[in-house]
Image (tube, rainbow, N blue to C red; front, side, top):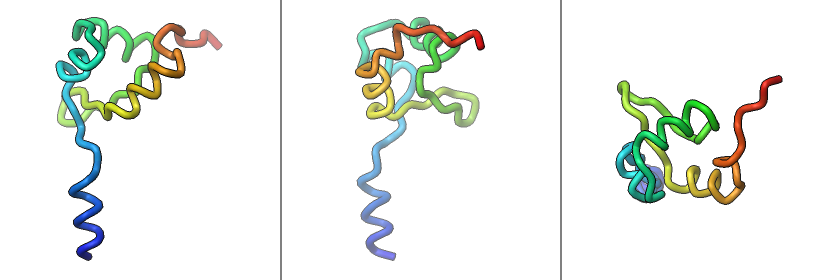
Length: 72
């Protein structure tokens, strides 16, 4: 039980749309557009978008921010 608590305490926090926009130095509107058009990794919780910085950073490094959705 104690090891589970320690693991949860060190888990990566969820951040807001405004915080991820600031992290990427872009506008909140750009982030919303990337979620909609380019499948940026985002999760909706309680009606608001939440992000894991590690997921978004991996997405940016992979170059996915420059690709549109496939039309298949």
